[in-house]
Image (cartoon, rainbow, N blue to C red):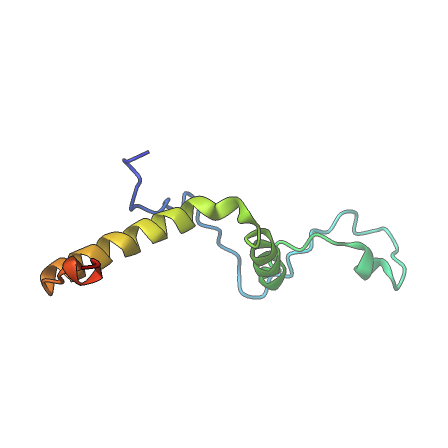
Length: 96
């Protein structure tokens, strides 16, 4: 747990796709298709906008609460370090 406290996971793959590649895999080249068959194919591996939108919608859940806790901890520590550096006196909050 503490080993990867500040490290981000590294990417393990590199996906290269040529510049002018459609991304839709062709099955049988002799099969006649209707004019609506383009809309039937829903898998496009180069649809980066679709991948981005799906990832963005998946990140809108509260499953990443650990990151929020880590962020709050870092902000609290930095605030305390800042208050120590400027020599902030907590005695002003005491009632006489």
